[in-house]
Length: 200
Image (cartoon, rainbow, N blue to C red; front, side, top):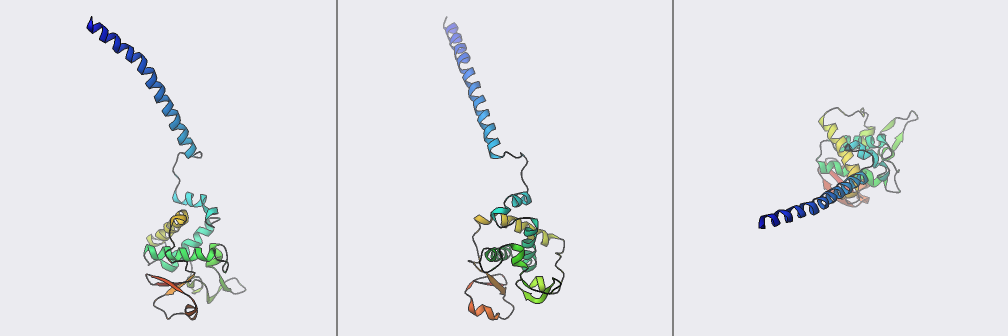
């Protein structure tokens, strides 16, 4: 008799608890599905770094891939042999100029700013960033150094809002192995990173 009571109690518990458990599981599955859709309504495939950069162009003054390439080249030609910090410092100075009322408001126009011949070519040693008017070609050498500069520029663009400006607002810099330019005495030095001295 006692075993019969235990068996009946067990069956009652199963018939009551099982539908509740199924209902709870279905409810959780529905919530999980909706959460997933709300987090990514475009695709379930993760975006590449380049795609993320493209989606955020309008936030960071980058409007197309040409602008991104300008920043990549500036990092490469100005600081390819520098540390990651040194390369980020060049990116920060470039952005500081874009955001300054005293310079153009896009990366390409900031980087290619300088005096030009009627033909459109820059005048030798008469531009803001020396690599652009040093008389040499401006095609990066394919390889790991160029790939690093490209990846760093993309990372910088997509994480710019979280990165502290390690140049402390610098708008200018020069290499420490040359004599101080005349303009340097009228600027405030902010920091030194690798072979560059920064000013604002």
